Length: 244
Image 1: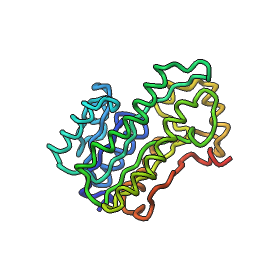
Image 2: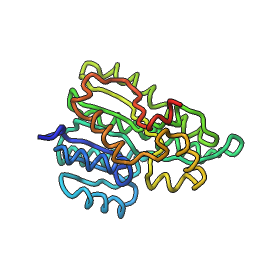
Image 3: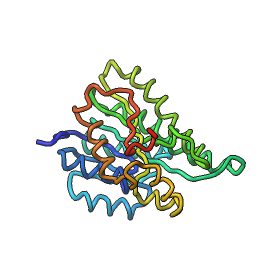
Image 4: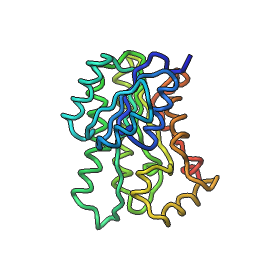
């Protein structure tokens, strides 16, 4: 029997990378999973790769109408949520002096505003005793040139978690933040140069990037009863990157 047997999970941004690896792991452990993605083709490929017990819902999690459509689908198909992994996000580099209004609005619109309304709109379907966790970033724990806007958008999530777990304590719903370190994903290929990748690898004690499957293991821990006494934490899964 899997650790998530009979559970219903929603994973935003689940069409690639860490969230897709987590969706696969959750299904292997017995869950039914709803995943989202902005690009229909990538979402269809993700659903195909998971293979069973999955529904894909196309949408931009910064768009409140798309969020409503997501949770309408969940309500129609399962009418409940046990696990919410709010992972949809974006990141782009810009040094102070070059930060544009568009960059700020897009980054905070998805990473911060989108995450807030994802959680809020999920609540009416949420079972008591469930688990909410959000994808933060070790960038919010360390200072990296060019990533101040991204880091700030992710740092806000821990403030959300602390407030929400107190508001939801009567329902025994846990709220945590998962901070991935440098992970080899398609998004990383888009935002990091080859030189930047080498720089980040040099700061990881083992000398290599993390894998999406390693984040999936931590996500499973936060989703299942193994973490029943874990609430309001920032869990860094970064190979020691943020510790040195």
